[in-house]
Amino acid sequence: MRLNLRASLLLIILSIAGSIYFATSVNFREDELEAMLNIFVAPIFGVATLLFFLLIYQVTNKIPIRSLNQLYRIYRQRKLAVVCFVVLNLVTGLVLKIKFSLYKTGGVAAIQNYNNKQDQHVFKYATLRTQQQPDEGVTIENADRFPSNNTLVFSLIQNPFRKQTSPNKYSPYNSNHDEVTIHVVNNRSNQLIIKRAVFSDNGLWSIKKINNLLVDATVFPITIDRNCTADITIAFTADAIKEKVHPFWWKGIFRMQYYLLAAGKSLNLQSDIINNSFNINGNLCLDTNDEFEPVKVIYLNSIWQYNGEGFWEPELQRIITAFNLKTNIGFKNFDNGINGDKITPMSDEVEADYLEKANLGMPVKITQLAAYHGCCLASDIDTLKFYTSTNAKPQNILYPVAQAGQTILPGLKDKNRYALFNPTEWFGLKIGSSYLTRKMNFENKIGVRVWKAFDYFGKRIENCYIVGSDYLGTPGTNYDYQDNVYYLENVRPIRVLRN
Image (cartoon, rainbow, N blue to C red; front, top):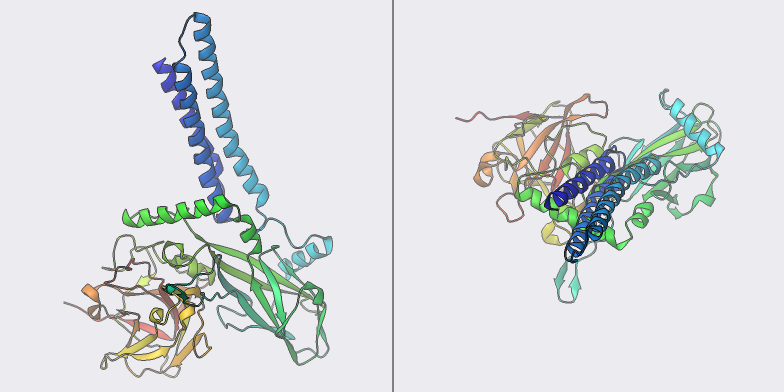
Protein backbone atom coordinates (compact mmCIF):
# COMPACT_ATOMS: atom_id res chain seq x y z
CA MET A 1 0.00 0.00 0.00
CA ARG A 2 2.93 2.30 0.60
CA LEU A 3 3.94 2.03 -3.06
CA ASN A 4 0.33 2.80 -4.00
CA LEU A 5 0.46 6.00 -1.96
CA ARG A 6 3.70 7.10 -3.59
CA ALA A 7 2.35 6.44 -7.07
CA SER A 8 -0.88 8.28 -6.25
CA LEU A 9 0.97 11.28 -4.88
CA LEU A 10 3.24 11.33 -7.91
CA LEU A 11 0.28 11.32 -10.30
CA ILE A 12 -1.46 14.14 -8.44
CA ILE A 13 1.74 16.20 -8.26
CA LEU A 14 2.32 15.71 -11.99
CA SER A 15 -1.26 16.81 -12.67
CA ILE A 16 -0.67 19.93 -10.58
CA ALA A 17 2.44 20.69 -12.63
CA GLY A 18 0.42 20.16 -15.82
CA SER A 19 -2.33 22.44 -14.55
CA ILE A 20 0.17 25.19 -13.76
CA TYR A 21 1.77 24.75 -17.18
CA PHE A 22 -1.55 25.09 -19.01
CA ALA A 23 -2.77 27.99 -16.85
CA THR A 24 0.41 30.02 -17.29
CA SER A 25 1.11 29.23 -20.95
CA VAL A 26 -0.47 32.52 -21.99
CA ASN A 27 1.02 35.75 -23.26
CA PHE A 28 1.68 37.34 -19.91
CA ARG A 29 2.18 40.81 -21.38
CA GLU A 30 -1.24 40.83 -23.03
CA ASP A 31 -3.11 40.97 -19.74
CA GLU A 32 -0.91 40.75 -16.66
CA LEU A 33 -3.78 40.96 -14.22
CA GLU A 34 -5.64 37.98 -15.68
CA ALA A 35 -2.40 36.03 -16.05
CA MET A 36 -1.60 36.66 -12.38
CA LEU A 37 -4.89 35.03 -11.43
CA ASN A 38 -3.92 31.97 -13.47
CA ILE A 39 -0.59 31.79 -11.69
CA PHE A 40 -2.22 31.55 -8.27
CA VAL A 41 -5.44 29.60 -8.88
CA ALA A 42 -3.84 26.54 -10.48
CA PRO A 43 -1.31 25.74 -7.70
CA ILE A 44 -3.71 26.65 -4.87
CA PHE A 45 -6.41 24.38 -6.29
CA GLY A 46 -3.81 21.67 -6.93
CA VAL A 47 -2.49 21.74 -3.38
CA ALA A 48 -6.08 21.55 -2.13
CA THR A 49 -6.65 18.35 -4.13
CA LEU A 50 -3.41 16.89 -2.80
CA LEU A 51 -4.36 17.60 0.81
CA PHE A 52 -7.87 16.24 0.24
CA PHE A 53 -6.45 13.00 -1.14
CA LEU A 54 -4.13 12.65 1.86
CA LEU A 55 -7.16 13.13 4.11
CA ILE A 56 -9.06 10.41 2.23
CA TYR A 57 -6.05 8.11 2.45
CA GLN A 58 -5.65 8.73 6.17
CA VAL A 59 -9.34 8.08 6.88
CA THR A 60 -9.49 4.89 4.81
CA ASN A 61 -6.21 3.70 6.27
CA LYS A 62 -7.78 3.60 9.74
CA ILE A 63 -10.68 1.41 8.63
CA PRO A 64 -10.12 -2.13 9.94
CA ILE A 65 -9.78 -4.59 7.08
CA ARG A 66 -11.97 -7.66 7.63
CA SER A 67 -12.03 -9.14 4.13
CA LEU A 68 -10.36 -9.02 0.72
CA ASN A 69 -13.55 -7.50 -0.72
CA GLN A 70 -13.30 -4.60 1.71
CA LEU A 71 -9.61 -4.09 0.86
CA TYR A 72 -10.46 -4.09 -2.87
CA ARG A 73 -13.25 -1.49 -2.37
CA ILE A 74 -10.91 0.80 -0.45
CA TYR A 75 -8.29 0.41 -3.18
CA ARG A 76 -10.86 1.29 -5.88
CA GLN A 77 -12.04 4.32 -3.88
CA ARG A 78 -8.49 5.60 -3.62
CA LYS A 79 -7.87 4.94 -7.30
CA LEU A 80 -11.07 6.75 -8.24
CA ALA A 81 -10.07 9.69 -6.03
CA VAL A 82 -6.67 9.88 -7.72
CA VAL A 83 -8.24 9.83 -11.19
CA CYS A 84 -10.78 12.51 -10.21
CA PHE A 85 -8.15 14.80 -8.71
CA VAL A 86 -5.79 14.37 -11.67
CA VAL A 87 -8.61 15.18 -14.11
CA LEU A 88 -9.79 18.14 -12.00
CA ASN A 89 -6.31 19.64 -11.92
CA LEU A 90 -5.76 19.29 -15.66
CA VAL A 91 -9.23 20.63 -16.47
CA THR A 92 -8.65 23.60 -14.13
CA GLY A 93 -5.45 24.54 -15.96
CA LEU A 94 -7.11 24.21 -19.36
CA VAL A 95 -10.19 26.20 -18.31
CA LEU A 96 -8.01 29.02 -16.96
CA LYS A 97 -6.07 29.16 -20.22
CA ILE A 98 -9.23 29.13 -22.34
CA LYS A 99 -10.86 31.75 -20.12
CA PHE A 100 -7.81 33.96 -20.54
CA SER A 101 -7.90 33.57 -24.33
CA LEU A 102 -11.61 34.39 -24.56
CA TYR A 103 -11.27 37.23 -22.10
CA LYS A 104 -8.43 38.98 -23.85
CA THR A 105 -9.54 41.53 -26.43
CA GLY A 106 -6.91 44.27 -26.35
CA GLY A 107 -6.72 45.41 -22.73
CA VAL A 108 -7.72 44.43 -19.25
CA ALA A 109 -11.41 44.97 -19.98
CA ALA A 110 -13.01 42.23 -22.00
CA ILE A 111 -15.99 44.10 -23.42
CA GLN A 112 -15.14 46.45 -26.26
CA ASN A 113 -16.81 49.83 -26.27
CA TYR A 114 -17.40 49.64 -30.02
CA ASN A 115 -20.31 47.22 -30.20
CA ASN A 116 -21.95 48.04 -33.51
CA LYS A 117 -20.76 47.83 -37.09
CA GLN A 118 -20.38 51.58 -37.39
CA ASP A 119 -17.95 51.77 -34.47
CA GLN A 120 -16.02 48.78 -35.76
CA HIS A 121 -15.66 50.61 -39.06
CA VAL A 122 -14.18 53.58 -37.19
CA PHE A 123 -11.42 51.42 -35.72
CA LYS A 124 -10.72 49.66 -39.01
CA TYR A 125 -10.48 52.98 -40.81
CA ALA A 126 -8.23 54.39 -38.08
CA THR A 127 -5.86 51.45 -38.39
CA LEU A 128 -5.56 51.96 -42.13
CA ARG A 129 -5.06 55.73 -42.01
CA THR A 130 -2.60 56.18 -39.12
CA GLN A 131 0.38 55.55 -41.40
CA GLN A 132 -0.44 58.54 -43.62
CA GLN A 133 0.94 62.02 -43.21
CA PRO A 134 -0.61 64.13 -40.43
CA ASP A 135 -3.54 66.39 -41.21
CA GLU A 136 -2.38 70.02 -41.11
CA GLY A 137 -5.98 71.21 -40.93
CA VAL A 138 -6.59 69.65 -37.50
CA THR A 139 -3.90 69.40 -34.84
CA ILE A 140 -4.01 67.68 -31.50
CA GLU A 141 -1.79 68.87 -28.66
CA ASN A 142 -1.06 66.95 -25.47
CA ALA A 143 -1.22 69.40 -22.56
CA ASP A 144 1.45 67.34 -20.75
CA ARG A 145 3.77 67.83 -23.75
CA PHE A 146 5.24 64.38 -23.15
CA PRO A 147 5.83 61.86 -24.59
CA SER A 148 4.04 63.09 -27.74
CA ASN A 149 0.89 64.84 -28.88
CA ASN A 150 -0.93 61.62 -29.77
CA THR A 151 0.24 59.56 -26.77
CA LEU A 152 -1.10 60.22 -23.27
CA VAL A 153 0.23 58.64 -20.08
CA PHE A 154 -1.78 58.10 -16.88
CA SER A 155 -1.24 56.56 -13.45
CA LEU A 156 -3.70 55.56 -10.74
CA ILE A 157 -3.50 53.94 -7.30
CA GLN A 158 -6.49 51.70 -6.63
CA ASN A 159 -6.64 52.43 -2.89
CA PRO A 160 -5.97 56.11 -2.06
CA PHE A 161 -2.88 56.49 0.11
CA ARG A 162 -2.05 58.84 3.01
CA LYS A 163 0.02 58.88 6.20
CA GLN A 164 -1.04 59.24 9.81
CA THR A 165 0.86 62.13 11.40
CA SER A 166 -0.71 61.88 14.87
CA PRO A 167 -3.54 59.89 16.53
CA ASN A 168 -6.23 62.06 14.92
CA LYS A 169 -4.41 63.70 12.01
CA TYR A 170 -3.52 62.52 8.54
CA SER A 171 -1.63 63.87 5.58
CA PRO A 172 -3.56 64.67 2.37
CA TYR A 173 -4.22 61.72 0.08
CA ASN A 174 -1.80 60.99 -2.73
CA SER A 175 -2.36 62.68 -6.05
CA ASN A 176 -2.82 60.64 -9.22
CA HIS A 177 -1.99 61.60 -12.77
CA ASP A 178 -5.27 60.10 -13.91
CA GLU A 179 -6.48 62.94 -16.14
CA VAL A 180 -4.88 64.37 -19.27
CA THR A 181 -6.20 67.17 -21.47
CA ILE A 182 -5.77 67.37 -25.22
CA HIS A 183 -6.29 70.53 -27.27
CA VAL A 184 -8.07 69.85 -30.56
CA VAL A 185 -7.24 72.80 -32.82
CA ASN A 186 -9.35 73.40 -35.94
CA ASN A 187 -7.19 75.12 -38.58
CA ARG A 188 -9.61 74.26 -41.38
CA SER A 189 -11.67 76.74 -43.34
CA ASN A 190 -14.94 75.30 -42.00
CA GLN A 191 -16.33 73.79 -38.82
CA LEU A 192 -14.93 70.56 -37.39
CA ILE A 193 -17.53 68.15 -36.02
CA ILE A 194 -16.45 65.40 -33.65
CA LYS A 195 -19.29 62.93 -34.04
CA ARG A 196 -18.28 60.68 -31.18
CA ALA A 197 -15.38 59.47 -29.06
CA VAL A 198 -14.82 55.70 -29.12
CA PHE A 199 -12.51 53.91 -26.66
CA SER A 200 -10.86 50.61 -27.52
CA ASP A 201 -11.76 49.21 -24.10
CA ASN A 202 -14.85 49.70 -22.03
CA GLY A 203 -14.59 50.74 -18.39
CA LEU A 204 -10.99 51.95 -18.41
CA TRP A 205 -11.07 55.52 -19.71
CA SER A 206 -13.76 58.14 -20.15
CA ILE A 207 -14.26 61.66 -21.48
CA LYS A 208 -14.59 63.69 -18.30
CA LYS A 209 -14.58 67.32 -19.41
CA ILE A 210 -14.86 69.43 -22.54
CA ASN A 211 -13.63 72.99 -22.20
CA ASN A 212 -13.41 72.37 -18.46
CA LEU A 213 -17.11 71.46 -18.16
CA LEU A 214 -18.12 68.05 -16.86
CA VAL A 215 -19.74 65.97 -19.60
CA ASP A 216 -20.60 62.40 -20.58
CA ALA A 217 -20.89 60.56 -23.91
CA THR A 218 -24.24 62.19 -24.67
CA VAL A 219 -22.53 65.52 -25.34
CA PHE A 220 -21.37 64.30 -28.75
CA PRO A 221 -21.42 65.42 -31.46
CA ILE A 222 -19.52 68.61 -30.65
CA THR A 223 -18.65 71.41 -33.06
CA ILE A 224 -15.39 73.38 -33.20
CA ASP A 225 -15.51 76.57 -35.22
CA ARG A 226 -12.63 77.38 -37.55
CA ASN A 227 -9.50 78.73 -35.88
CA CYS A 228 -10.92 77.58 -32.54
CA THR A 229 -9.87 74.95 -29.99
CA ALA A 230 -11.72 72.42 -27.87
CA ASP A 231 -10.08 71.09 -24.71
CA ILE A 232 -10.99 67.45 -24.08
CA THR A 233 -10.05 65.93 -20.73
CA ILE A 234 -9.63 62.14 -20.70
CA ALA A 235 -9.71 60.28 -17.37
CA PHE A 236 -8.19 56.90 -16.56
CA THR A 237 -10.96 55.51 -14.34
CA ALA A 238 -9.92 51.83 -14.30
CA ASP A 239 -13.53 51.00 -13.37
CA ALA A 240 -13.32 47.61 -15.10
CA ILE A 241 -10.21 46.72 -13.08
CA LYS A 242 -11.78 47.90 -9.82
CA GLU A 243 -14.80 45.72 -10.47
CA LYS A 244 -12.62 42.79 -11.38
CA VAL A 245 -10.48 42.91 -8.21
CA HIS A 246 -13.39 43.72 -5.91
CA PRO A 247 -13.87 40.13 -4.59
CA PHE A 248 -12.15 39.71 -1.22
CA TRP A 249 -9.80 36.97 -2.41
CA TRP A 250 -8.04 39.41 -4.74
CA LYS A 251 -6.83 41.26 -1.67
CA GLY A 252 -5.13 38.06 -0.55
CA ILE A 253 -3.54 37.59 -3.96
CA PHE A 254 -2.10 41.10 -3.97
CA ARG A 255 -0.85 40.71 -0.41
CA MET A 256 0.81 37.42 -1.37
CA GLN A 257 2.49 39.18 -4.29
CA TYR A 258 3.75 41.82 -1.87
CA TYR A 259 5.37 39.20 0.37
CA LEU A 260 6.85 37.42 -2.63
CA LEU A 261 8.40 40.68 -3.85
CA ALA A 262 9.82 41.32 -0.38
CA ALA A 263 11.20 37.78 -0.18
CA GLY A 264 12.68 38.11 -3.65
CA LYS A 265 14.52 41.28 -2.63
CA SER A 266 16.02 39.61 0.44
CA LEU A 267 17.09 36.59 -1.66
CA ASN A 268 18.28 38.68 -4.63
CA LEU A 269 15.62 37.11 -6.84
CA GLN A 270 13.12 38.87 -9.11
CA SER A 271 10.52 37.58 -11.54
CA ASP A 272 8.52 39.15 -14.35
CA ILE A 273 5.34 37.43 -13.17
CA ILE A 274 5.33 38.85 -9.63
CA ASN A 275 3.83 42.35 -9.70
CA ASN A 276 1.44 44.68 -7.92
CA SER A 277 1.27 47.22 -10.73
CA PHE A 278 0.43 46.83 -14.40
CA ASN A 279 0.72 48.59 -17.77
CA ILE A 280 -2.72 49.13 -19.30
CA ASN A 281 -2.80 50.28 -22.93
CA GLY A 282 -5.59 51.28 -25.29
CA ASN A 283 -6.62 54.07 -27.61
CA LEU A 284 -9.27 56.68 -28.24
CA CYS A 285 -10.66 57.37 -31.70
CA LEU A 286 -12.31 60.70 -32.45
CA ASP A 287 -14.69 60.24 -35.39
CA THR A 288 -14.89 63.56 -37.26
CA ASN A 289 -16.11 65.14 -40.48
CA ASP A 290 -12.56 65.91 -41.58
CA GLU A 291 -12.16 64.97 -45.24
CA PHE A 292 -8.48 64.10 -45.15
CA GLU A 293 -8.30 62.10 -41.91
CA PRO A 294 -11.77 61.49 -40.43
CA VAL A 295 -10.51 59.42 -37.49
CA LYS A 296 -8.04 60.94 -35.05
CA VAL A 297 -6.28 58.26 -32.99
CA ILE A 298 -5.01 59.01 -29.46
CA TYR A 299 -2.91 56.32 -27.77
CA LEU A 300 -3.53 55.80 -24.06
CA ASN A 301 -0.85 54.30 -21.79
CA SER A 302 -1.59 53.80 -18.10
CA ILE A 303 0.04 52.42 -14.97
CA TRP A 304 -2.33 50.89 -12.42
CA GLN A 305 -1.18 49.90 -8.93
CA TYR A 306 -3.07 48.37 -6.03
CA ASN A 307 -1.60 50.31 -3.07
CA GLY A 308 1.01 53.00 -2.49
CA GLU A 309 4.68 52.85 -1.44
CA GLY A 310 6.95 49.90 -0.77
CA PHE A 311 6.59 46.82 -2.97
CA TRP A 312 3.32 48.15 -4.41
CA GLU A 313 5.20 50.55 -6.67
CA PRO A 314 5.83 50.03 -10.40
CA GLU A 315 9.38 49.17 -11.36
CA LEU A 316 11.50 51.51 -13.48
CA GLN A 317 11.29 49.46 -16.69
CA ARG A 318 7.47 49.53 -16.46
CA ILE A 319 7.55 53.32 -16.05
CA ILE A 320 9.83 53.75 -19.06
CA THR A 321 7.62 51.45 -21.15
CA ALA A 322 4.56 53.55 -20.32
CA PHE A 323 6.27 56.51 -22.02
CA ASN A 324 6.85 54.49 -25.23
CA LEU A 325 10.60 54.41 -24.62
CA LYS A 326 12.58 51.27 -25.50
CA THR A 327 15.52 51.90 -23.20
CA ASN A 328 16.79 48.71 -21.58
CA ILE A 329 17.16 49.40 -17.86
CA GLY A 330 18.88 46.07 -17.24
CA PHE A 331 16.92 44.99 -14.17
CA LYS A 332 13.39 44.75 -12.84
CA ASN A 333 12.72 45.54 -9.16
CA PHE A 334 16.33 46.22 -8.07
CA ASP A 335 19.78 46.32 -9.65
CA ASN A 336 20.45 42.57 -9.56
CA GLY A 337 22.42 42.64 -6.32
CA ILE A 338 24.95 45.18 -7.62
CA ASN A 339 23.83 47.51 -4.83
CA GLY A 340 25.02 50.63 -6.61
CA ASP A 341 28.66 49.53 -6.94
CA LYS A 342 28.86 49.57 -10.76
CA ILE A 343 26.76 50.17 -13.86
CA THR A 344 24.28 47.47 -14.87
CA PRO A 345 25.67 44.95 -17.41
CA MET A 346 23.74 44.22 -20.63
CA SER A 347 21.80 47.47 -20.41
CA ASP A 348 21.72 50.95 -21.96
CA GLU A 349 23.28 52.53 -18.87
CA VAL A 350 26.30 54.83 -19.21
CA GLU A 351 28.82 56.03 -16.66
CA ALA A 352 28.53 59.72 -15.80
CA ASP A 353 30.09 61.89 -13.10
CA TYR A 354 28.85 65.11 -14.68
CA LEU A 355 26.81 66.29 -17.65
CA GLU A 356 27.39 69.05 -20.18
CA LYS A 357 25.32 70.84 -22.80
CA ALA A 358 25.47 69.12 -26.18
CA ASN A 359 24.36 72.18 -28.16
CA LEU A 360 25.75 75.32 -26.56
CA GLY A 361 23.11 77.48 -28.23
CA MET A 362 20.19 75.66 -26.59
CA PRO A 363 19.16 75.19 -22.95
CA VAL A 364 19.07 71.89 -21.12
CA LYS A 365 15.53 70.61 -20.69
CA ILE A 366 14.57 68.32 -17.79
CA THR A 367 11.17 66.64 -17.53
CA GLN A 368 10.22 64.71 -14.41
CA LEU A 369 8.73 61.45 -15.61
CA ALA A 370 7.93 59.84 -12.27
CA ALA A 371 8.28 59.94 -8.50
CA TYR A 372 7.89 56.77 -6.46
CA HIS A 373 9.18 57.44 -2.98
CA GLY A 374 7.62 58.65 0.26
CA CYS A 375 4.25 60.40 0.15
CA CYS A 376 2.51 62.69 1.21
CA LEU A 377 4.35 64.87 3.76
CA ALA A 378 6.54 67.93 3.27
CA SER A 379 9.49 65.81 4.43
CA ASP A 380 8.91 63.52 1.42
CA ILE A 381 9.59 66.26 -1.13
CA ASP A 382 12.71 65.75 -3.27
CA THR A 383 13.55 69.05 -4.96
CA LEU A 384 15.75 68.50 -8.02
CA LYS A 385 18.99 70.45 -7.73
CA PHE A 386 22.11 70.95 -9.79
CA TYR A 387 25.71 71.79 -8.94
CA THR A 388 28.76 72.44 -11.12
CA SER A 389 32.27 71.08 -11.33
CA THR A 390 33.55 74.26 -9.65
CA ASN A 391 30.70 74.98 -7.27
CA ALA A 392 29.35 72.01 -5.28
CA LYS A 393 26.58 74.02 -3.64
CA PRO A 394 23.31 72.67 -5.12
CA GLN A 395 20.79 75.07 -6.66
CA ASN A 396 17.09 74.29 -7.15
CA ILE A 397 15.63 73.36 -10.55
CA LEU A 398 12.25 71.64 -10.04
CA TYR A 399 9.90 72.02 -7.06
CA PRO A 400 7.62 69.00 -6.50
CA VAL A 401 4.55 68.93 -4.27
CA ALA A 402 4.20 66.58 -1.31
CA GLN A 403 1.17 64.66 -2.60
CA ALA A 404 2.94 63.71 -5.84
CA GLY A 405 5.26 61.09 -4.34
CA GLN A 406 3.54 58.10 -5.98
CA THR A 407 2.77 59.01 -9.57
CA ILE A 408 4.07 59.54 -13.08
CA LEU A 409 4.46 63.14 -14.31
CA PRO A 410 4.17 64.41 -10.72
CA GLY A 411 2.68 67.81 -9.98
CA LEU A 412 5.13 70.66 -9.53
CA LYS A 413 4.66 73.94 -7.70
CA ASP A 414 5.19 76.03 -10.82
CA LYS A 415 2.65 73.84 -12.71
CA ASN A 416 5.18 72.95 -15.42
CA ARG A 417 6.24 69.40 -16.19
CA TYR A 418 9.75 70.48 -17.08
CA ALA A 419 12.49 73.05 -16.45
CA LEU A 420 14.89 74.84 -18.78
CA PHE A 421 18.28 76.03 -17.57
CA ASN A 422 21.61 77.09 -19.07
CA PRO A 423 24.65 75.70 -17.25
CA THR A 424 27.91 77.20 -18.49
CA GLU A 425 30.12 74.32 -17.33
CA TRP A 426 29.94 70.68 -16.34
CA PHE A 427 27.08 70.07 -13.95
CA GLY A 428 25.72 67.28 -11.79
CA LEU A 429 22.31 66.52 -10.32
CA LYS A 430 21.36 66.13 -6.68
CA ILE A 431 18.14 64.17 -6.19
CA GLY A 432 17.10 63.65 -2.59
CA SER A 433 20.23 62.50 -0.76
CA SER A 434 21.98 61.22 -3.89
CA TYR A 435 24.44 62.92 -6.23
CA LEU A 436 25.27 62.11 -9.82
CA THR A 437 28.97 62.35 -8.91
CA ARG A 438 29.80 59.09 -7.13
CA LYS A 439 32.56 60.44 -4.88
CA MET A 440 29.96 62.66 -3.20
CA ASN A 441 27.72 59.70 -2.29
CA PHE A 442 27.50 57.28 0.61
CA GLU A 443 30.32 54.71 0.22
CA ASN A 444 31.01 56.08 -3.29
CA LYS A 445 27.98 54.21 -4.62
CA ILE A 446 25.88 55.09 -7.66
CA GLY A 447 22.92 57.06 -6.38
CA VAL A 448 21.85 58.40 -9.77
CA ARG A 449 21.95 56.13 -12.81
CA VAL A 450 21.94 57.40 -16.42
CA TRP A 451 20.62 55.53 -19.46
CA LYS A 452 20.59 56.35 -23.17
CA ALA A 453 17.10 57.16 -24.45
CA PHE A 454 15.60 55.08 -27.27
CA ASP A 455 12.26 55.83 -28.92
CA TYR A 456 9.31 53.50 -29.52
CA PHE A 457 10.97 52.05 -32.64
CA GLY A 458 14.25 51.40 -30.84
CA LYS A 459 16.04 54.34 -32.45
CA ARG A 460 18.58 56.25 -30.35
CA ILE A 461 17.36 59.74 -29.39
CA GLU A 462 20.40 61.94 -29.81
CA ASN A 463 21.66 63.79 -26.72
CA CYS A 464 18.75 62.56 -24.59
CA TYR A 465 19.07 60.47 -21.43
CA ILE A 466 16.92 58.94 -18.71
CA VAL A 467 18.00 59.50 -15.12
CA GLY A 468 16.81 57.48 -12.13
CA SER A 469 17.73 57.94 -8.47
CA ASP A 470 17.65 55.94 -5.26
CA TYR A 471 18.19 56.89 -1.62
CA LEU A 472 21.58 55.76 -0.32
CA GLY A 473 22.62 54.88 3.23
CA THR A 474 19.08 54.75 4.63
CA PRO A 475 16.83 51.92 5.89
CA GLY A 476 14.72 52.47 2.76
CA THR A 477 17.60 51.95 0.32
CA ASN A 478 16.52 49.27 -2.16
CA TYR A 479 18.44 50.15 -5.36
CA ASP A 480 15.34 50.30 -7.57
CA TYR A 481 16.27 53.72 -9.01
CA GLN A 482 12.70 54.89 -9.59
CA ASP A 483 12.40 57.17 -6.56
CA ASN A 484 12.70 60.06 -9.00
CA VAL A 485 12.94 59.64 -12.77
CA TYR A 486 13.83 62.39 -15.24
CA TYR A 487 14.19 62.80 -18.98
CA LEU A 488 17.10 65.06 -19.99
CA GLU A 489 17.46 66.72 -23.39
CA ASN A 490 20.52 68.41 -24.93
CA VAL A 491 23.11 66.80 -22.64
CA ARG A 492 26.21 64.62 -22.90
CA PRO A 493 27.60 62.50 -20.05
CA ILE A 494 31.06 63.28 -18.70
CA ARG A 495 33.15 60.65 -16.96
CA VAL A 496 36.01 61.77 -14.76
CA LEU A 497 38.96 59.39 -14.94
CA ARG A 498 39.81 57.81 -11.60
CA ASN A 499 43.01 56.15 -10.46
